[in-house]
Amino acid sequence: MKAFTLFGKVVTTCMALVASVAFAQSQSLDRNGVALKGYDPVSYFVDVKPSQGMEKFMAKHDGATYLFSSEKNRDTFVASPAKFVPEYGGFCAYGAAKGGKFEVDPMAYTVVDGKLYLNKNKDVQKLWTADVPGFISQADRNWAQLSKN
Image (cartoon, rainbow, N blue to C red; front, side, top):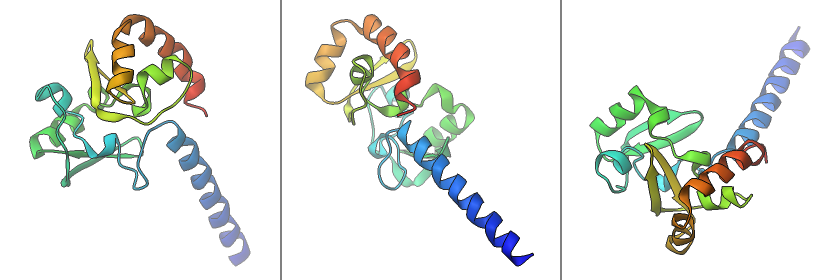
């Protein structure tokens, strides 16, 4: 019986590791599992500018930890997280349109039709703004495959 229990634990642990590795690839997270480099996702919509979050105001969603600048923003997020999480797992939206996954600068962003799109940096953001609807369409088509890699 002990051998079976140990085997079950090993199998369960291996499955969890595989799932977490696969999931981590679909989101841009730091080594501690924090999304948006610690910026408050609600602040992009409510404050109309990104604010750095604090560990005392945190929430988890889909395996990622989000930090918030206030208790109110955290509670707003918890009530409806899908409204605030960045598109394309928090990777660069322009990069997704071009078929790649790139880390972002949380200060290089656009909110379009109630969705948050991040870019690698301000220079890439300039390229992105040249055809936002076209790049969103391309990124949407590419993301199904990219999120698996």
